[in-house]
Amino acid sequence: VGTYYSAPAPDQPPYVNVGSMIKNDDVLCIIEAMKLMNEIKSEISGRIVEMLVENGTPVEFDQPLFRVALS
Image (cartoon, rainbow, N blue to C red; front, side, top):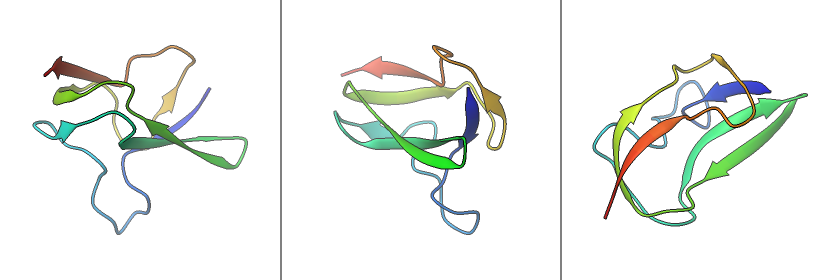
């Protein structure tokens, strides 16, 4: 359980957008839990086709964050 952040800071661009190509180990977002900022890294390669969460919203364990088309 934590808060989803799409960018490293409010004045920075998001890590990924719809259409972004990603590869294994790319940082996709940050989840803040108990004041700790945890970088969430990709475990697959592909293209982001849908973002399922909005910036600053609470997320839960095992909740999908992105829909990815595999490459």
